[in-house]
Structures are given as structure tokens and as C-alpha cells.
Length: 206
Image (cartoon, rainbow, N blue to C red; front, side, top):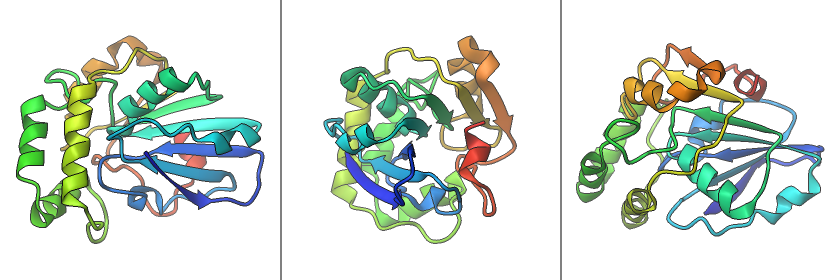
């Protein structure tokens, strides 16, 4: 796991953001807010304790895409109990035909990964602007690690956002995955990356 501070001004609340595969912090750069924001990604190994979190009075965890299952695995390992837990565009079973993406499709993405195919992935995801730089070998290793790790333990979320135009993790798969937590689900008419310029973090944690 890599960690990167997107904002750090010494507030008492931190937003812990588990990003998606290979996109880095780009999807979140349009969001504004007053809290400190710690971004993590690269789920090849989930061995970073994120010890800086201990200094905060309140921790809100926002998990996006493959970050949803990775966050749930990491929480189980560390025992951290966030004050609020939010899932966006992801499920607890990322490599799953009915509740995520079919494992064969993930393997094919890894096997055929190139700069050009990644740029296409970013467009399908709805990411504005140019595709981020990508380390092909590292990104492939992460996909295989996600498949191998499997589904995360069940966990209740305070809010679950499902995009209605998701071309990465099918909308129907997300609906099926969260059928047991309907009270927390909100659907939005967006692609996989649902964040837009002018929005604040608070809009996604209400």
C-alpha cells in the first residue's frame, strides 16, 4: 500500500481514501473540503498500518472501486473502526461474476495491459483528462493480488454509492452485491468515476 497526503493542515478529522486500481488520486482532485485527506492505493500487499491516523479524533473512510474490498480486508487486519464508512463504485467481492467483475475479465485486463489499453480503461471509467502514468508490471501484479485475495469479510457501510452508468464494475453486479444493505444505498446517474468539479467531500459522506 502506498500513502499520499492530498491535504494536511492539522485538523482533528481525517478522510482516509482507498482509491481504485491504477488511477491514483486523479479521480479525487476535483473534490474540496477542510479535513485532512490521506490517500492510499496499490493493494498488492495490505501491510501498511497507516499509523498517522492515531493522531486524529475522527476518521472517515471513503473506499472507491477495488478500494472497497481492499479497505474491508485492511480494516479486518488492523482492527481500526472508522467513525464513518463509505463505499463508492465498488463491492466486497471485486473478482466475482455476480457481485463484481468476472475473474477471467480481470486476468485478461492484466494480460493485455498496455499504455493504450489503460488509456481506454480510463475513458470507460469516466476519468476526465489524460490517463495517469502507469507502471505496467506493478498494475498487473495488483490485479492478480486482488483476484487471489478474494472477497472481503462482510461489513456494514454507512453510505453506498452505485453509479447507474458504470462500465467497469457493472451496475447490476453492485446492486446484487449490496442487496442486504439497501438502507445505505444511493444511486447516482454517473459513470464509474462519479466525482465532478465543484463538489465537496461532504457530498459523498452524508
